[in-house]
Length: 178
Image (cartoon, rainbow, N blue to C red):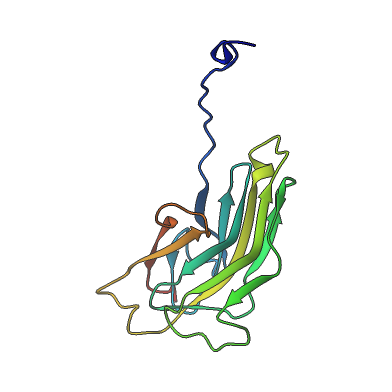
């Protein structure tokens, strides 16, 4: 073929962005509603990560626990993974367990090596969900002057060209029902 340009064409490919979503799944107190929480309440949070069909290395999810909350050691787990998701292995939790967590101390899980998403036929196929539990502490950080709290989850990986992705969950400390 004499003129190669006759057999070339430009194309644009758009890949879905990764996403992270932080939500309150359940709590131990029947007297509170939604994100209104009280001292002593144990709260289960869900972090759902949606990935494009791709590969990424050392995928890390961090839960930035707000002051006045304590992560319950050993409660972080993979609750579900879509059919197309193969998480890197081994998964490591930081800080290492057992660990006596204190108020506002963050927890991270890193899926070492390559995480792959391939052959997805639905959004759910490209997602995985983590669950973790935290306790609302009787702590100076939880007082009537500062009842609003923000719990942030972040997503990062080695090849990420920008800042970590994040999602905030607004929480409010309320007086207990007696």
